[in-house]
Image 1 (cartoon, rainbow, N blue to C red):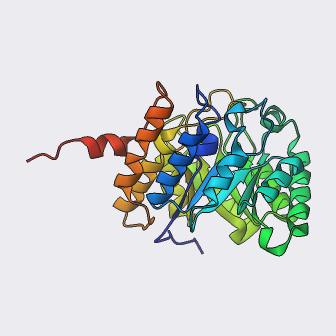
Image 2 (image 1 turned 90 degrees about the vertical axis):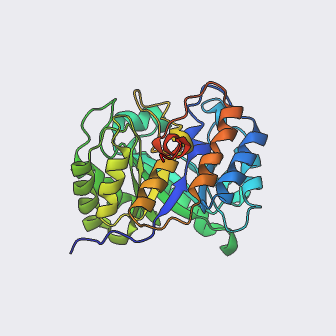
Image 3 (image 1 turned 90 degrees about the horizontal axis):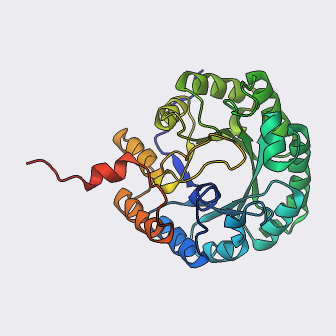
Length: 309
């Protein structure tokens, strides 16, 4: 039986991590914490605030520990980070995060370029991270999400066989992922492909399939989100103003625009718990802290238009 579209969805903001890692300038820590506070005040309940990776590879996220410390002071906020290996996960657990996303690419070429490991080695890294989590004190055990990157294709490898995606998703769950999200890292997926792959992966791992992470390289992020929602997906990553892109995946442009996702779901009568006007207002922080950075999104432009008499 096909899954029913959910009446409420979780919009997980990834701008402070995925959005900033490809920005032209490095956002000051004070601006990051002000931005995260504004996002939470708008109703976002889960924010990926940074990544515990080598600062020489991604200098934009070198202050993640400080940003986490601030985010943890915000009541009710799920504080998430990305960590590709055990060393990063140790730092994340010590910082007290609520959720760790472990990237595992279905494309061998992207996996080697992004984290310097094969997909199989990344699965083993996930297994080691799960062991670290389970060894932590009970109140300090974050959820482990497997982020299945390049699930819909790769600009380095080309076509990524769906059989590989299904196989790796199953391996991630077997290695200890609490949930798995499908990522269109390079933004080249299409709605028919999204529907087909969601069905295939869900048939393999069931409720462990939690959400999608979409990029807008070909202008299809909203269409792909709608297709995933129709298939019962209830968690969607977005980045305010569509900031982002993978520095290790040539041609990958920005993320799905958080404001546009919220606007679309509200138009569909789907609850998000997010105040769209306050969310759009938070764009001012980006404009000030990242002068010259392109800010995308139709919802912000539409809301700014005068109402016709």
